[in-house]
Image (cartoon, rainbow, N blue to C red):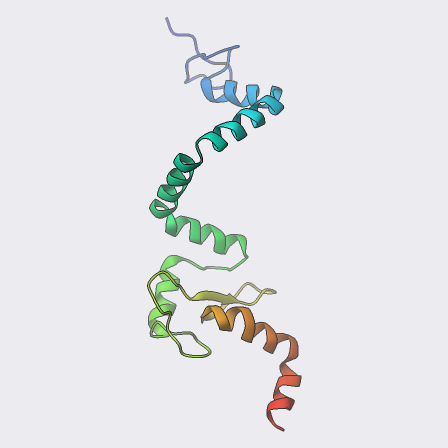
Length: 148
């Protein structure tokens, strides 16, 4: 006869009346310092293996990670499908300067209003990091300077 865990009746008891997952969480909580020490030692000894595993995960889940990042940045309604639609709409070029990325590894950045979260378009790295912030901060001064 099988003993059922108190935490999850559909699972088998692993230790102290708990299933395997809950027992491990409880052990980590009680032995936090030892857990952190073991975790750091393992990662230090297996740096190459850990990096390979993280890269494999990233390449398998690139789209999910990207959407999670957009959501965390507060970009409302931004999905991979919307990114591709904006890319087609802009002919694969930056919305400000019209330059397309040099290679496939470079992607255009999603420009959005930080107050509302609404997406404005896709920008190259230069426009995203230098031009647009300068215009937002010094727009009137830039216009006055350029009209001299």
